[in-house]
Length: 152
Picture 1: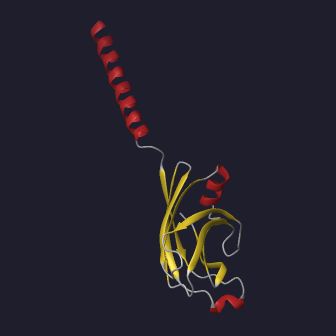
Picture 2 (picture 1 turned 180 degrees about the vertical axis):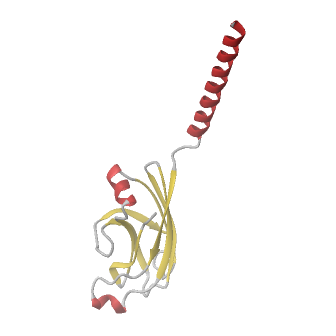
């Protein structure tokens, strides 16, 4: 009977050690990463913008914990890019900016955009609900040349 208790204790110890080891390995991996994508395209707010906006682009956004990292490219603008930012709004409806992004090539019709920012819990919920979009402004389209909703 003592041998049996000894083997049972050893088995319990081995299982507990394995569980701790797997938990520690998981903790080292860091927070779960979620990937989102956006296709950037012209979205005219009114008919007068049809002759001033053009182009396309794409981006990838990675959420790790509260940190959102964005990287993308754009090309084909009819006037040089001036600024880029993340906005909150339903699809097709302009909304307020919540953060700026870096344009690696400003004053050009093509380039790269990137940025890293820490989101609040509400902003993370907005991201997962498809309410955040990236907007690139240009000289001839200061209210937005390319827009792209960031989606899972």
